[in-house]
Image 1 (spheres, rainbow, N blue to C red):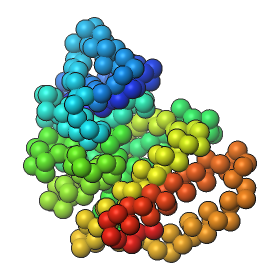
Image 2 (cartoon, rainbow, N blue to C red):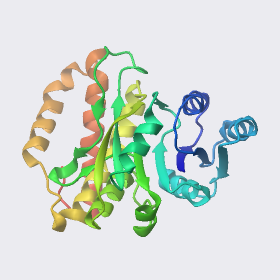
Image 3 (cartoon, rainbow, N blue to C red):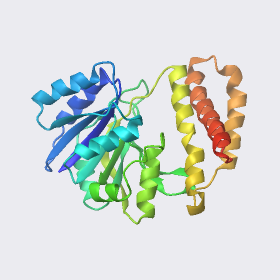
Length: 278
């Protein structure tokens, strides 16, 4: 069996769209969906429970007493029955064939990263799916928690997601598994349509949060080989300075917010952790 773990916090109405996409999946392997609610106040928990009454392969766990998506995912795994585990987010949409592709990948590997479609849910021109399995910090490849599959045995052996590591917990999990000797693969048919944020503030805040994980990953794994791209950082900071006068232009605002958020998040975490990772 494969268990799909969906953490959610205030996910309405997008949660319904994701659950409909999951319900439409066809997979020869028996499967279930576990919705792990992380303290929603918008009716997500109630909606998921109502959905479960008409979809017998859907379980709902109340993870409101826990902090963060990592803890919610671990809570979902704790009640799941599958020997295979797949993770996706409540505000995205899995595409046809996603679940079968996850299963196929795990027949030959211990963990697998899918691909992302960045155009279907956003106002940008169509493009081929993008690989999630990129080599972060010039180190090992890693997938993202929004489209990741792993065998239960290895997942439990390394202790699941590190609940103190948010964000970046998905990269950390992938690295811990590989350093333990488990096999990493890509699942090119496992495509998730990724929903992008569109306003300046939310893009900046999300990028700031993501930026904070870089220094922590570097500090934790630098002895194993996780490095820094100082030339890339220099170019990024120069671009931010040169582009600042044009930030009022709609076409520049979001890109600038993403770049500035990432770099400032890295600076804050570098100071807090006592490392240099700009």
